[in-house]
Image (tube, rainbow, N blue to C red; front, side, top):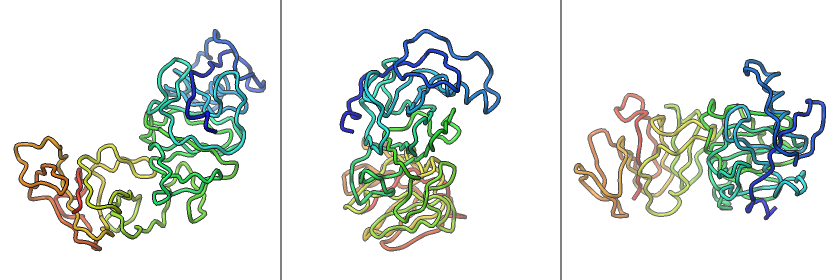
Length: 313
């Protein structure tokens, strides 16, 4: 599937077949979509059938399958559809049929394939130490901001799960997608309800008892590291990490500092120290330090649900 990493503008599908018809993926443009208010599942399915045809995995730039369209499992309008497990570690070269870039612009999806397809927020690096999921292609996969779309399923508005306009990678398997412990991943549930923080990692949690969803800072396996602004990070189920950290496990061999302030490499007038990387850092009274191999519950502390930056030394 190397060709999937260099996808050109893909075909628009715009003739108006009935839901029972099987239309070719490269029909010419021209027909308008059905005109109705989307107030029922059957109407939404009709629009999904109108724009995405049998065998296609379709992504759209607007909710309810509007805007630009890309067929993810095809190299172009005249190419065959891929109907076997595949992985595209990054989609930054994909384009919608409108000519706009696909990366971080997917708002709704339709899966007309026989495969289970997983969209993730991060471009994949192939790093086995960060892999959360088992893929049939053998590609190591880190499940950041994961959503799984089952065969025949569709999602008309990804913003409801805080994941619209974020996806950067996708893979499809012929069997239900599982994590490393062989648990099936469902789009509507957290990735791993029995998660345990790995050795040599820094893990942050949604609840005060090291429960709920967890985010692993894989960078902490290397020395030292800093995250100046966590506002772009998400838990596996898509909830933003920023201002939702309630307990922390420091499994590293270094001391880690948690700050309620977003930090900046350019510094601010209040900067009163520097990180090992030389970054100006603005400490205040609410910041806390977690010793190596220690853990902390933040409930009742001023910094609870307020962490915006982290560094370890």
